[in-house]
Image (tube, rainbow, N blue to C red; front, side, top):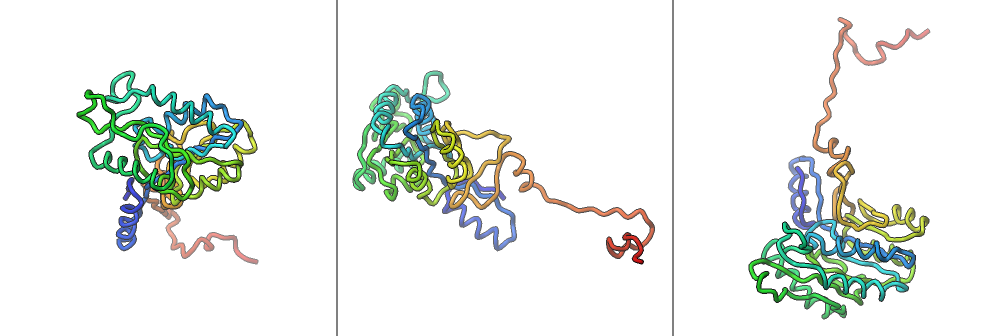
Length: 276
């Protein structure tokens, strides 16, 4: 069996499969961090943030939902995200020129809306977005504005819970070590990324980030079909979809022996040279 969905449901399926001795592959929730260090290419990071957080309306398990920014570039990057997000076009995602489509249904919209109260109640600052659009042309869909919160701290619900919408939470750090600590401070471990020109930090992040996927100078969103896909901690149970590893999960190994000697072979040692 294979399941993609919430950690809560995946855990229940896992309990059932355990009792039935059924093999199970789980790909569950994510709270994917993008780290932007002080030496990052901010033009590249900006493009990654917009696509990672607001592409597909944040409705991908690999969507960027936490932006962990070094304090030296925090204000500049936030300003640039706000300026760029104001130009994003909402509408039918199948049409050219549309950047952000609708949420999948009314329940999804209500869930996203609920965090507009949760965030400020916990002390986060709503920088932009936070509401449904006022364009009458969008009344027939479950649209929500691209949204950004700052002053988010690691243990806030904005930083811990999977919202699955176009909502990005910004956390400020002062070092690489703090950035990794904040990134790993979650029950999930699907995708992660770091923007830096420091090769040492890039290669350390490949090891240090607790995630099944790590991108260097790329957003958390997206995957290649020929590469293993999956996560750790509350995101998965050790199996991977995609790539060569998926064949191990979706097939059964059968061992076959063909004896053409015409004699009983008690064990492989029967064919060993005679002992002196």
